[in-house]
Image 1 (cartoon, rainbow, N blue to C red):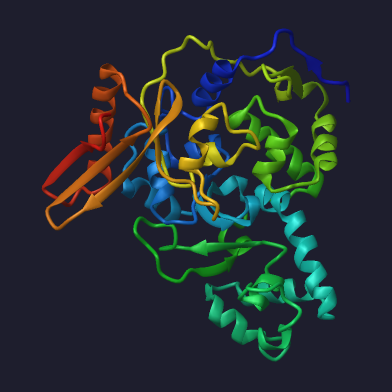
Image 2: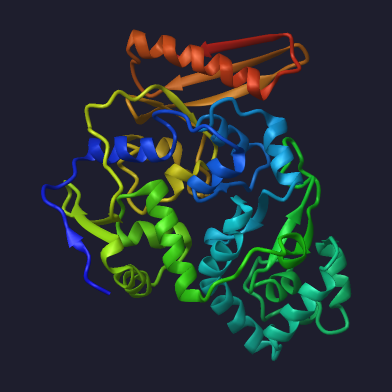
Length: 384
């Protein structure tokens, strides 16, 4: 392929901010179906059932809880472990490529454990998919494999503190998705797993290289321009040479630029950047919001001064809100029998115009989250 091109002037931090917000539907909300929007976003982090609903509400015009639940029930959206070995909601058509692109590191890690235990991981995976041609709980899966191996038999081989050993080794190669009601609003029960081929028979699984390259294109469409380290962070591939080689293989489909900090950034040819002077309305980000987690360097959204307040040592990312496009405070919702209160905890003084806009947006959000209560309020903590 021909080499990629390099653009001119460095991209300012505010240009990266506005471009990211535009591609995320956080400047102007997307229209269309939940599956289409989630596809444009290259998936949403979903280890907690409610959080992707909140993330998508901020990005998709007119979203209802029922609409996303229906998309899951109809197999248009699936909940599965993909990027960074973390649960996501992804468009059904993207599951195969994202599963393959994110699986190499997982396979290498658990393959080493299997080698020490003298287990044939490929054979175990094939048997897992055969057994999961119908929905199965983890307990059922581990009971099925009990004669071959058990958690007790792997004691001393598994990494310390890691449970569900049998399921992790047999499932390291992916190929499983959750069956509804997993992924539904307020659904926290034990998930059932099914072979993705049985649930999504028409979805293809490309080769590892093709999957990584398509995933990079998906990522840049939703998060670009970005660095190779950002891409590796998002997909869960720490080997930078592998990411860079995949980028190089995209040839003229990639354009290069630099940020104002001197980092090399890549983007898809033909995609526009957004003018830094573009107004950015107040928006709410969910817990573990993908737009924060996806980057190696997060200053385009999260100012360094506020990083410690938003990101916790245990890997938690607290719900936050944006003012002028940047994280400016935290939010939470407290529900009682008859009321739901959204509390705003700003990091500093919020201009009066933004304050009113946040209150309006916050009231819409709390009504979305708690439609069954009679009273909805927005309250500020501190001076605001």
